[in-house]
Amino acid sequence: MIREELTAIAALLGGFFIWNLGMFAVILVRGLKRRKEARLAEELQPVIREELANYVSGAGNLPKLQELCLRSRRDVASVLMNFQGTVSGGALNLLCEASIDLHLIDDWCTDARSRDPLRRRRAFGRLAFVCVFEPCRRIGGDLLKAALDDRDPEVRFSACRALAQIGSIAQIERLFEAALEQPLLTRILLTEELRRFAVPLCERAVMKALSSEDRDRVVACMEMLVAWERAVPVPDLHMLLRSPHRRIRLLALRLAPLVPLESADLGAIIPMLIDDDVEAATGAAVLLGRLRVEDALPTLARSLRFGDAGLARAAAEALSRMPPKGWITLEEMASSPNSLSAVLARSALDQARRRGTV
Image: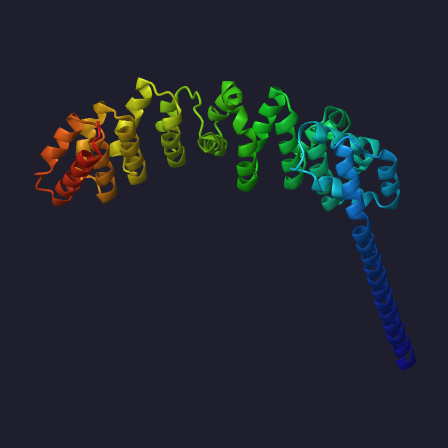
């Protein structure tokens, strides 16, 4: 019995030793391979960089690049991508054409279908770069469109960036809709890519998103509109200003200076001065002062008299921007028995007179 147990233990120890030896061999082989690749990259990359620079200048030697590809396609692809952001126009087209002539784009299309997330991310990043060139788009464009629904957020972002540069307005609208469902960081990055399409997107896609019953989708859309900082048409802004959801009301206030306001919109902003939400009331006071809406004078005076310190200060500043009626109101409030209101009114009036507000 003991002999059998010792035999089993010896077999286990032997197996463990062999497994450790195998793992050590794998690590050793990988280390040697990486060192070999590093030495090869150190040798080839300066040569590749020079050949590609000559190529984009129109004096390139394609057979030489093909020879370098035979030695290390990985290094040629890596150096080619280092030109991203440094070339444009005809030079960029030549660089993208090189990715076709060297069949690198075929490699990236194959990697884009890989199950390895790192390979797929790298492949889509490279496809996003070269697909600004129409012949490259014919090869890899369909992969980029399909990647909008990819499970990997980095892959989706690469696809979105590429389509923002090359897509039709229909594709841009689809990209906008996809951006609304992305995590915050990805959506922020895509917001910059979509900024130049603000006006055409407002014709249909934005209106559709703002009318959604999904509150998170509405909020995401409004955050993008505010971040664009561009004049945009938003019909029925007053509906957003009257939303029962606080976040939507606050974003609507930030959006109001960018939108051609109608009487219904102003009619929704003025009552916000007496909103229980101090942040909303203060934002409304600042906005009304900036717009110099004299219809809001009575409500601003009330906010100065009864509001908390922040709201009262914003109301006083708003009144100071609307002479002569706003100044008259401040003069009356300067003698108010409410010491806070009196101090804020006198201070706002003095500052307005010093800067010569008209």
